[in-house]
Picture 1 (cartoon, rainbow, N blue to C red):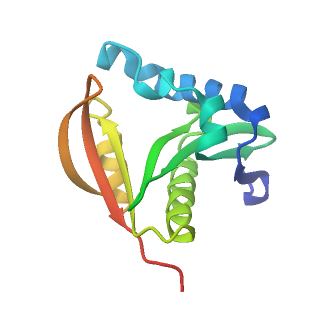
Picture 2: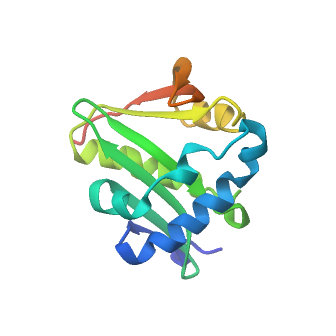
Length: 156
């Protein structure tokens, strides 16, 4: 796929159905491992588009990825990142991580934090490959989570 076929842009209310489709497809494989739907599958993406920094990755005219970034006082929380399984392996996850890091820089925040479910073992190699350091493990909201952080250099 050519780079010109891919665009990362702010999500609009009209993207909510596409976002929900991508999230369902990306996280469905984890339901059996966790024993219930992962938290991103139960989120309200209509509300997220209104209240968070939500970006979609559009490939060949269709939403193929999403990242939901929530602004906190001292960091950016990368709340959800999902790539349609049909589009995985093309570097789209790395593009969306970079978008989250750009959000942090643009907002003057020096750190991006995120968490993943302990059962999502693929993520526990993915995030460290992109400079994220494990900071803790624990149970939160009924899920066993692994927490990560990455320091972000400011703009300029």
